[in-house]
Length: 171
Image (tube, rainbow, N blue to C red; front, top):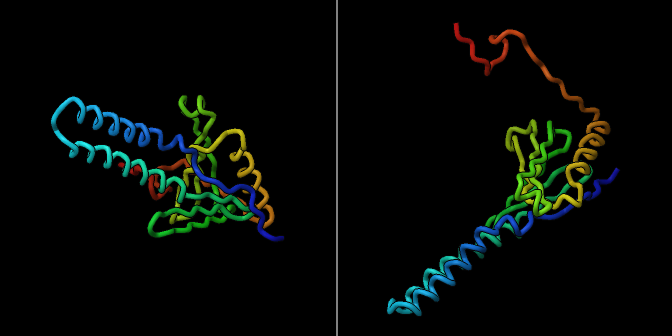
């Protein structure tokens, strides 16, 4: 069965609202200070710093792409150096969808993907629109991939503190 793309996209630009607001603020302040005082044109460096910061945040946002296929979650990021991190869906242990108040108002969500992969134990797909129902699509793809590959998860619990390597065994 060939690998099919289920969704491809990036975070919403609301993620950079603070950077865009900061940039706008530095422009207004530098214009205001230049008019109100005799500081001179050097005050516009403040605006340049704000604009460069917002531009960098924008570049980070548009160069970070997520792709969910029928077998993998592929994260590609980087402005100067591109890094691609594929994660096999059968390695996903759990999904958590987080929607703080401001994200609910904006109809956005953060999807936390908890994995068994040592190199990326948690992947966060942040500021994703809720209307595309990505969490449900991802869950269905994970279940399908696990069935096709014959993967099952095994939860081991213990009643004794000393049986777990990370347990606090104080005597």
